[in-house]
Image (cartoon, rainbow over all chains, first blue to last red; front, side):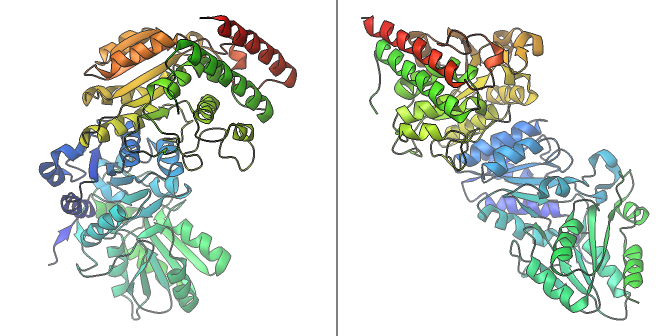
Length: 306
Length: 282
């Protein structure tokens, strides 16, 4: 059996390595352990700033640190940041183009047992309309390490959308990661399936049940969207399903369909949370109940590709 | 830029900046009068006496930092910057016009010397805290000044920042509160409770001074004292909104509007008389 791990642990690992760069600092809104910052803090205690349960001020402090040349990683849960401090993100971070990295763990229904209040399902929708921000949702532990390091190198605001639960890795340590460049996980035909985050494990599972290979794209960078890779694939397959652990309104599916409706209209289906709040349960139980699991993905593929 | 040390020199500069404000706001046709006029003396003291800065090198690493949290009063900063040599004073007439570097609310990307674009209230002090943390981390000697408004103390995020400064014992941070008792829809005490402001800061482990925000001697000597104190310092500066123009003083109706040409002419006549009075002083 493959080892399972979480994207947030990948972030923790990357931060422990990134700490060698003295410009890198970290902040957490009283969620050190959940944000996996322990290793960083142990190695670089002076460069960690506890921000308390005060996300608005955390983002403001990160702004000030960035103005002074630091590379601050401000961490919380997706339901609190960006939601609680969206104004600070809009003005202090995005308008000012400060080099702030916003890291939200516990995104999506797969947050699980904590229930609806803690499952960030609207974060991408909230952030996607803000100018100057880059939004990244890596699919696994390995990719998160690379994404975190790439975020540190990129000058400007970045939002890293991470997750609590552990999943199998879809990418190897050697696989390439470039911000803004979608990764084709599987070359194929008849339909393009686009997704981001660990929900892609369900996509892979569903596709194994098919007699043909559909094209699967890991669109880890939600903004800016890699329109080139998406259009190239869709021109070939002419059908699209977007899978996301996020509300169907405003997420990756919206980004993709905005692109396609202008450039290459084809039949699309967005699989995601259907404008509802979640509830307590195990990640897989929740994905099943709300139609984000491999069984439902397979059903939707079959209804599009007849 | 020559440092102004004589009170008379500072008063004359403040008078000039008040004239600039009336002209630029009238020309812009919109903007705020009350707050900027009330802050003229503090900004004159900052730019012409207190701040370590170089108008030709706005990003000089050793400069003192100045964040203006209530971005809407930016005309006072623009006028002070122009007079201090950051840009030509003619540019003040572009305030709020299409394509200007002098945006209606200050923009860091447009105008060098603006540390942070602000305007959504309650964000400046937190950013100043972050700058102060960086200053401590790098053992830098400069001071971080933040000018906040009394009205923005309605914002919970302002108090989050107050806590943060205390937690990190930021003795390189000075918050100057423009205590002018007005905000956009009325007097501060009618709009939202702001009692015991001094005590509230003291309870959060800040050292607090109360000063007359139009008295150069007090402004300068208090900041000198503040820089030596080993904890974050809050200076509650009592100011008169609209200061220097009789029909604007204390009137919250002047918070957010620009003078018409006739009103500006009256204001300039008053300011000119004040200039003559200052000139006659020793």
